[in-house]
Length: 253
Image (cartoon, rainbow, N blue to C red; front, top):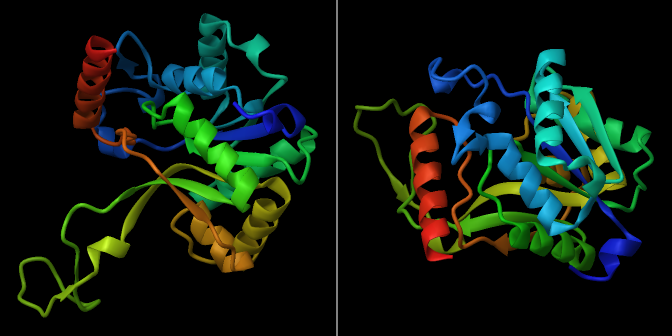
């Protein structure tokens, strides 16, 4: 961890309130699904604790029951003493509303406008402490950063009206210029809060936090290459894959 972390402690906004409909009812809440003997969200909390970058955690929860369950996980991990503040707020109708609520909660908790905010999906349990530190330090240096990996598949672009199963023209995109973004995505609090205020006020469509930053501020963002799996738990098979990855990591450590 760099010495700047002590001078400008970061804030993590953890988005926990997704509906989880693609889990097909296999678990009540995917962030509490068992993974290598612990809840999915416990792995996320541990990574942030071990990274040392975040002084404040903001959990954006669906409801009071989910908040209580997150509090229980924090107690199990004895994680409260590792953070200066732990804050809870409610999510919104769409992801953009949930992020805005989380950013406003961070501001209300006293997080400085120039502090780095790492926005992360609580359903991404494999993010490593090293990756969190790299994103944080790159944001300090470059102004904004996102964890990402290179696109390895051939990507085709088709006309907008094309339906699956029907023939159409295809266009090859230059794979060398394509990256798939992950989380965390990190920015100074004041700038990303301004961006999301505008996105929500003007009902703009954004696909992730980098999109919001670019649409509202025309912001430049550094890509932090991630060579390790950082999948988001969205379907039952993802839990199986994540478990296999964790077991392999434990055997090779």
